[in-house]
Amino acid sequence: MSTKVPQNNEDQEIDLFLISKSIGRFYDRINSSIFRLIQFFVRNWIIVVSLFIFGFGLGWYLDFNRESYENKIIVTPNFGSVDYLYSKIDLIDSKISSGDTVFLKKVVGISHPSAIKKIEIKPVSDAFKFVEDKEQNFELLKLMAEDGDINKVLVDNVTSKNYTFHTISFISDELVDEKEFIEPLLKYLNSSEYFNSIQKIGFKNLEQQIAQNDTIIAQIDNVLNGFSSTVKNTSKNDKLVYYNENTQLNDIIKTKQYLVNEQGKNKLKLVSFDKTIKEINSTLNIENTKFINGKLKIILPFLFILIFGFIYLFRAFYRKQSQKGL
Image 1: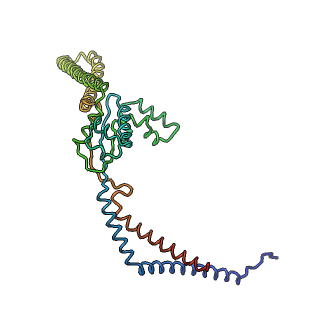
Image 2: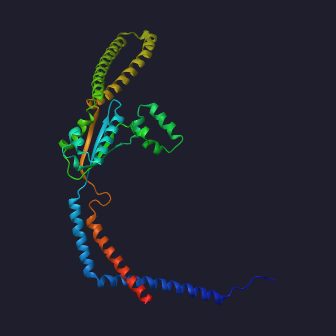
Image 3: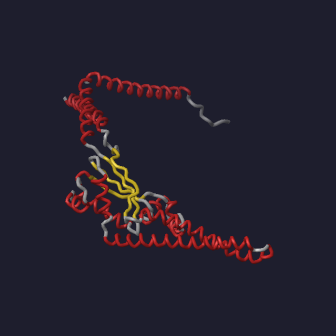
């Protein structure tokens, strides 16, 4: 015999009716809210339009007089000067924060120091360049990544400071000129007597290395030309001697290939070794639109209308509660 209690169809119908009624009341409240909102704008359209026009005008004026530009300089620090570069940028940023315009003008050489609001430096992440032809760097990355995320390792100070390129960024409230801002800044960064001495020695050593490699390559070419002449004059019965000499020839060719590759890298280095902090490229006067910069003409009209609506609702709520108290 079945022990199940039959469901009461009438109770189910009542539950469905209550749910349907609740949904209907919810939509009614939404419709009422939309109607009151429309009614609010209809009753106060003059005030709303006036606030919108005033907010737009004020925002446009503030945007026009609150200019902000981002400027970027890509540099490469040579001769192990990366920590020196970062410390100098941190020093300049601290002077900007403290408002020390005398230091910025007299020491750094910037003619309009008050125009600069912030300066910072970040590495240009390039993991492939970091490990290129440097097995020790690749092993370092593998070791550091064993206990953490590889993405965090790539932006870690220990790793990132060893990247080739770094970006110096600063914010200004006026258009900057390369002669008045960039050149004095780079001149200041290259004013270290220690690194200037290192740069002169390093540049001279690199020139000597290039000249020496050219001499060795020329000597190898002479050996190869001599070997080629010997092969042409050697009879077919001298195959064994040819084989022994060919084994040494492979080593000579590999040595030449290595030196040619080194020469290419050294000549590229020579371009940037004329300075301790070498400028690669600069991009100036990028209009800064981050956060609310340049957007006040859009934000202020809606902000004023929102504040007016809040005040209107507060007054209505206060009157309603006051009438209840009476």
